[in-house]
Image 1 (cartoon, helix red, strand yellow):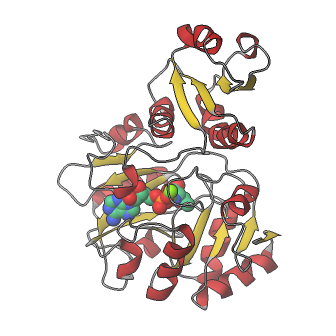
Image 2 (tube, rainbow, N blue to C red; image 1 turned 180 degrees about the vertical axis):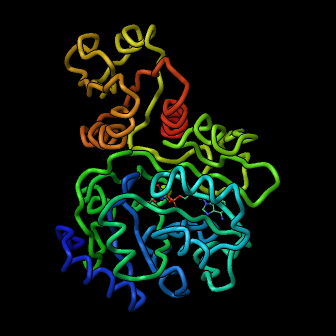
Amino acid sequence: MPKVVKADSQSIKKAASILRDGGVVAFPTETVYGLGCDTFNERAALEVYRIKRRPSSNPLIAHVLDIAMAKRVVIGWDVRCQKLAEEFWPGPLTIVLPRRAEVSPSSIGGRSTVAVRSPSHPVARQLLESLGSPISAPSANRSGRISPTRAEHVVEEFAEEPELLVLEGGASEVGLESTVLDLSRARPLILRPGAVTVEMLNSVIGNVSEPFVPGQTNSPGTSAKHYAPRARAELVEPANLERRLQSCPDPVAVLAFRAEIVPAPHVAIVMPTDPREYAAKLYDSLRQADSLERQLILIEKPSERAGLWAAVHDRLRRATA
Ligand code: TXA
Ligand code: MG
């Protein structure tokens, strides 16, 4: 089992020294937990890919303390980046730009671009401060699985990694991975929707496009099937849920807005109607549903689509692909 330690100044210092020595640590961010390594260390990144069983072509996000540290990773920091960072950093916005030569090629699948993000979680920030250098980190889950929003989720994912240190820093507040915005091209393109919405981005730089049709962008992590629970998951229109449940021969788990329409022996996991609360709870609820070991998880489809709901729908679509 990985070693879970409560994040404090001592354990954060220890984690930073592991990173400095080319090792890997898991740490909390406000979106999801990350599996971090030194952005400039070629061998350390390979270890992240091994632990995650991630295809080597799928690039990692470099986490930075601030704009100054971002400039050690990317080139072409223009007025759009400056405005976006001033508005949304630290926070759940990742920007893709041409990379500096120092970024380890293995951490970005040999690409000419790199993604950067400045996390707001105090533990992530203290870790960056203590290391004094960028940390490349994917979400701390096995490739293709649900992202972790709690330290115990990371332990579930990497049970056979006894050496892995996990900094425990509470539940991730946002609960969905960051918005990924490609600024390496003429027109800004959302590669992955997140808590910084297209509406928010457009209010700052304008002209943002968002085809984010799974598999249609040049971002491997946006493939259609992703963020998947072990059981088969199915999205159901609210009006059809009662009928769909009646047609289930075996007991199923249901992520529903209304517990009262889910009769025993089916099990309801009640979801909040507020989009922020829904997002924060979604991955934990999918894991909970999975742990019930039913063949099928039904998810009542949220009827709203704007703002943060767009990111929620994106993850629901992938969880049920
Ligand atoms: O909220 C988050 O972004 C979390 C926390 C830990 O910061 N990290 C995260 O990393 O979700 P990961 O590796 O699970 O997802 C990164 C996404 C993937 O879809 C990847 O393909 C895309 O960002 N990405 C990274 N670098 C890229 C690049 N240079 N060009 C295009 N897409 C890139
Ligand atoms: Mg991920």
